[in-house]
Each structure stands twice: as structure tokens, then as C-alpha cells.
Figure 1 (cartoon, rainbow, N blue to C red):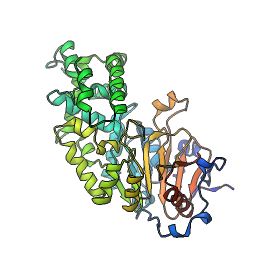
Figure 2 (cartoon, rainbow, N blue to C red):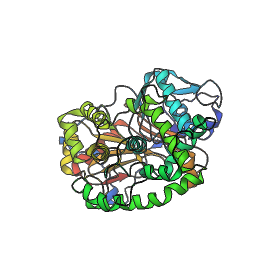
Figure 3 (cartoon, rainbow, N blue to C red):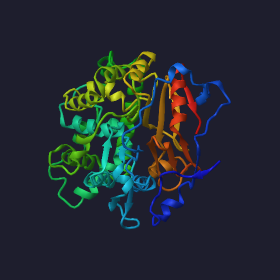
Figure 4 (cartoon, one colour):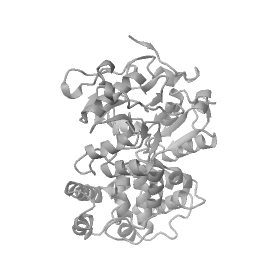
Length: 454
């Protein structure tokens, strides 16, 4: 049975956005056709697990993840969630908070950067939320931190652990350099102190010896699968990065100049986007919900149990200041915004899940895992995950055969439960608090992989 969507009321003048959204909601779809996908009904929950009660966030949460430099998609998603409006019909950067927006917390799940089409406008849209005094929590994404690692590696003395980190950003960062060059350098004498093309190439790219030395350097930090994956990835990026720069109309001199400007914009105290990495957090716990970009591992589970999320965030920022970029980027802290629970990633086992549950965390809300048909709730390693990366940016949507920019958000509030809103699914998916508690009990009881179908 379909019903009007609860608690979502975009202003009527946003006709283009409203026209692309579902107008009704239905209970979160479930697939009971296979044992592996089975989820306990609430009445099936063992009585001795009822003591593990879910605690809901103090404020209603609007979770938007992986906007990937699409400011239009990001702002449309805020409007669709009912937390913001635009004074003008279509202009970016003219947001105001609604009554609901003032009462809610907006959690941005990471990956604000890369792909395009509007890295800088996206950052300015996020910055405007801070200026509006919205409750905003900005989480670290792997694409965001890759930029930071690349810029820091370029600024520091080369070693085996850091000399690949600039090129490792890959083709998806090129649109940012194009934007920075066009907006800040194109009409200036940018080339006055920039070395020749060959010198820029040597400064940007890892040396040939890196490919032989890195596996030994990474031994003990990465799994064998992780080392092999890293080397293969760098072989590909080393060969293609310059081609992608040229395809966007940038020489390596221009890329180098743009990267120096990015250092000024993001890293210098008075830089326009200095706030971006400074405000970033690794995790955010709200009640029994843990918000992060990717996932957890055993080490992070133990850290959360023993020291809590505030300590994890403090450790994140302390480690960002380390001279050893390698030690940070391949650590358990960085695994939190990179993992997909692959063999190449640091493991999450029953030991880690037990620690996470014991710390009071029962649901992980994440981005990073791309979904083309709206959000998914799944049980991974015995831990409930809400996957909320729903392909917002127009660049990715074009590659995936989807039209226009994406619109969607995940709303979490005890009064309505979890609402998955996406322009790519015919209804809003709603899971009530009671239903979610039943799913949590199943994950807690079984400790295996299960999932709720789209």
C-alpha cells in the first residue's frame, strides 16, 4: 500500500525538482526468496535480544553522500529533503534553511570532490550551509583525502611512501585542476615561475624505481592483495594521467601551476577553502548510528570501544599533520574512508563487530558504495549498514546511463524511521523504527552477511 511521503515537503516553486521525485512511499522492499537474504520479522526477534535497544539521533538527520562536485545535485537533494530552499528558482548559492532545516542535522558523507562538473561551486554550497548556521557535519571521503595527500606529497621531499600520491589521484581530479586554472590563473602570468614540462613531469610522477621499492616499503602495512592492487593501479595511472590532462586541455606545466594554487586555496591559513579539511571528521556517532564514508575494521572497532568517536576524530586530525603520509594513508584510520570489505582492505571480523556492538553502535550509515536504484540496507559481517551513495553527480550518471543530475537523501528520525529518497526509484523507501530494530537483532544474532533488497 502506498502512502504520501512523511515529513518531506519541498517548497512548491521547486517544480523541476518535485517532478523528478517519487510522490508516495512504501515499506522498504525485502527479498525473502533466499536464505542468505532472509531478515527476521519483528515478531521473530529472540526475546533475550530485546535489551539491545536502538538509540535514535537527537536531531533528525539528513544524510547526503558522494555529491562528487555536482553542486546542482547537492542543492537539489537538500531541497528534496525539505531542509533548504532557494530564493531564486535555479541559481546556485542562494539557499536558505527551512524550519525543518533549522531543526535537523545535515551530515555530508564525504567525496565532495572529483569527477565534476563543479568542484568549486560544490564547496561554496557547503560553505554557505555553515554561514547559515546549519547543523552541518562534514565527513572525510577517499576522494577528498586523495587531494590532500597529493598536495602534501608535492610540497614535501619525495620518498617511496609518498612520491606516487599525486598521480594516484588519477583522472577524476583533473576537472578540479581545470576549474582552478580557469578561475584563478588563466588571466594571470601563471607561467612566470613554473619550470619546463619535463621538470614538472619529474615533480609530479613517481620515479621508475618506485615500482620495485614500494612492495618492500609496504610490507607489514598492507595485505599481499593490497600491495599487488596498489602497484597495478599505479601502473595504469602512471601511463594515463598525462593523457587525461592533455584531453582536458592542460599541459603538465598548467597542472603543476594549478596544484600550487590548490595548495594555497586549501592548505594556507587564509585560503578560500582552508575550512574544508579543517572541519572534516572521520566518524560521527548519533545515538546507535555511526556515520562514516566507507566502513570499519577490527582496529577501528577496538578504538571506538576503548576511546570513542571523539578520540577517533582527534586521531584523524593528528595523523593528517604527520610527516609520514604513507603511514596515514594506509592506516586503519584511512581504511575507514576507503574500505569495501575486500581482501585488499584491512579486515572486519567477528571480533571487531563484537567491539562495535559493545560500544553502542548498531547501524553504520555510509556512502562510497555506488547504488543506481536508491539506498540499500544490508547486513555486512553481522553489522547493519545503510548504503546511501545513490549516484548524484551528472558525470557518473552519464557513464551509468542515467539522465541529468541526481537527487536524493537518506532521512533518519525515530518518528519516521529511515527514509530513502531517490529520483531513481519509484517510491520513497521507508523502514520504521520497529522494523529496523528487527533487522538489527537479526544481524546481532547471526553475525553473517544478509541484505535487504532495493
